Image 1 (cartoon, rainbow, N blue to C red):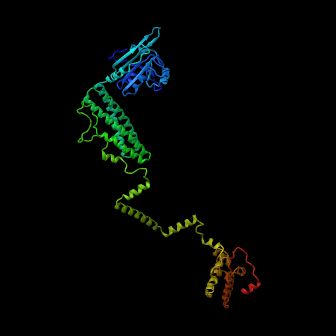
Image 2 (image 1 turned 60 degrees about the vertical axis):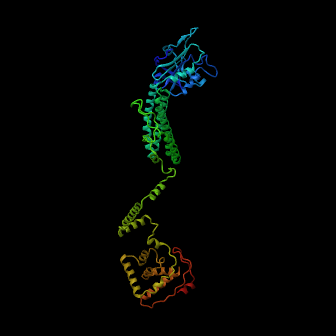
Length: 527
């Protein structure tokens, strides 16, 4: 077995690590951790029983910071899997199936029956790759001396090792500062997703820094440096705790839970207050050892913390719970908080816009308005029926008989009306009856108006017969016939007839239905 103070030979072997097969190299651990190399004869060797094995106590060293333990035997990785499962081992198990590493370490031997075996051996290697403790035996039942290993670990290190650990921790701390500063800026700008990502990264860096600073405390020999390493460890620990709270706070805000986010933000103030009690860890590249007794700040020290001050912290917190905010609330708040001048300006702007709209409507002239109304009428023919459509509908009995106005018509007016109708008939080549029907949008009997009476005055014998037939329909048509007779006699210079109107029947008669027959006695009385 290698003696103490010797340089440890490097190696790379197949291994079972956390239940997975991979290759492990010694160089991956040297410089960062203290390495314990344990050689054992075989899986399920004579030192094992149903409940425990020869690596049980050494497996506990995996719980210690900055310590790596590697177990090596001639068995394959597949055998290691069954061995680790049987005894619930966490130690990485390497396979030296060809015995090359055992030979280089000088622990191979042949037993009394000619078997090639390896001794049980332990070597403790410091950060520089130097063996600080070694032990070996060819007795398959003898177990490693755990207490001696613990003492060797306690003695491994020194100021150089502590400084090397501090340097690594400071590098992690610097990266954590960058991430934390970026996260705080995003947090204040309510960029929750980015803040959450940066806080998580800062947490990881600060936690790694705290582990390295703690190792420096354990390894240092110079007692004057202990307060510096401890102060760096305290500040890094408080920072990763604060970053952890703020990560969850940003996540709550991002999911819309403003009240929960604010509570988590308040919880982060506890470790933040601890952070402000310590100065920044000294840079290992500056003068060393540093010209400080410790990192605790006095009351008169300026705050050079990477965290915001109390006033800055208030800015980072939201003034309102984002769970309660809605777009309508924001609009109302903006209006409530506006200055009176701003409100008046807004009202004036609205009035101007309204007046402008009104002016634009007044600019439409009569021709354009007529075109718009015509277009609307064309697009909505049922909304405003034309005069012709109204004329074609059946007309109910009117409240006042049309003869009321006809009786007041003078002889001269009747002559003028007859002359106009006759002139129209001559010009168009159409009968007076056709012209009258076309002008009224219906038959003479359908529209009891003054124009219909004038048209009947100029009609021929056929028109008179039609008017007489209509006279039997209702009292209105009867009155019209009498008016025609009166106008004819007036044209001939005869006496003007005074007619007495009959009371209208209570129910209207549809013009399309045939006139109801009346008795001769009733007709005689009307005449």
